[in-house]
Length: 355
Image (cartoon, rainbow, N blue to C red; front, side, top):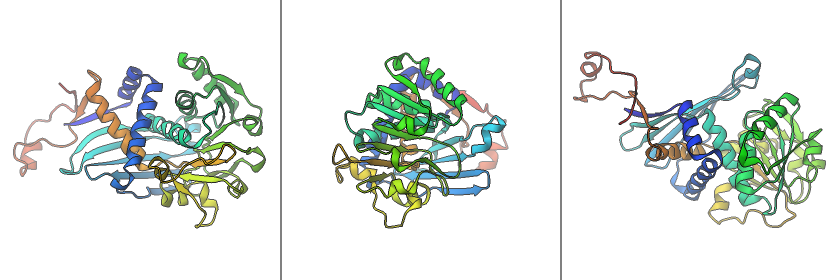
């Protein structure tokens, strides 16, 4: 039997811990794995592109555990009443090859993306940052707002989206959270208006194109830019001249993948970047001065999903009654008799609660 976490299970686990503490604990797990960067087998994700979207596989292994995520990105889905992004993942034991956990990752990907954004900002943004612009108020926006308020103490959120319905949705959802009672939410008339006087600017838009969300006049000394939306070839959010800004420091998750998918796909192959692992391991100082502009060119890397699956599997042992299992792999008295042990006996129940 294999441990299973569905959407209802992740709702229970997050509800048990609280969204803020869940994000903070997840960020700590991600940081711990980045600190042991050299232990991981790393590769860019395998992507299958179509005119309407992308389907990707994202593997990672530390030699003891192996994980992969299946994830799609289809921006037109919302017009059909479907999610833009869905995902699931598997955590497996390297020694036996047996899967240990089958889990939803649609909700968890949103949580780990926000946790990673806030974790990077902890290392790269000014420590006195209190105002964040949030450009793109769709499915990722609430998670980003909660993570930055919880982990960095953001006091004011300046929000903007080309779709006012999305902004209204964001405002409504955030207003329901007591832990955000001290967060001031300001609806901005434009992206430029939102960025004015912001310490951190997060872009989380969904259009699968080379969009121009941020332009050079919007960037002020001391800003930290958290570019989340650009995550596949031909999909970016920053004007190329932003990347040409003198003194800009760019940080990435896994350079070979970001060169293909991130904002830096717009620049020359020798454009200088720093991997985030070098910052957490003390090989690079991160932000060097209060006036420096830093950019986290986030595309999402498989190590973060590995961390999330490992974290979720551990939570099953902490939360009483949370554990469910599925018969994904046959359990045989004689491992050499696959036919007799499966098709030759009555079928077992497909899903049961462990214990």
